[in-house]
Image 1 (cartoon, rainbow, N blue to C red):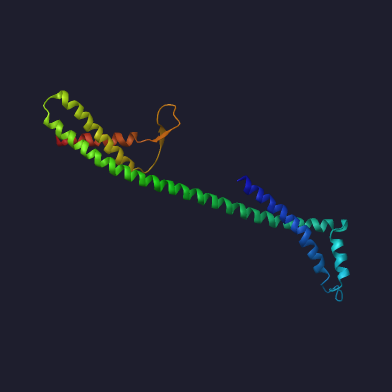
Image 2: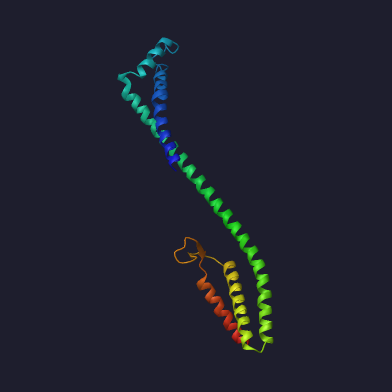
Length: 200
């Protein structure tokens, strides 16, 4: 951004220099082509005098007027250039964010696919074994595995349906962040529990 502002200043200063050093002398030379000098347009000695007069103290006010005009033009051009740079930077940043989001989405889909496949096997076998074991001592660990399977499935579905991202610290005081799914998970697990109670 500092580079863009410096370019903006240089545009203004450059416009002032062009106005004073080029436009002002050119206007003085163009003056002798007018009807008040019908026989002298090709008198190069007059051209030299006009150029010398352009940078004399007597013409300083006129020169400053042209410098101000050139500076105003440079100011406008610099503002346009700075705005163009800002839009280009914003567009590039947007493209980077979109690329990162696309990559993250592909990663989420890939992870969800493989984790869901493994989770279906784990949850299915734990539920089957749980029904086949009469001893509560053995059924309790399987119940924990089955519950964890529901939680994993709820996490996957929550991430797939995520419409708004909010982050919380991974652990207290940590700089690392994780997506906050607490409310979404609680709602899904409660719905799952009610469904299982109804089926049983």
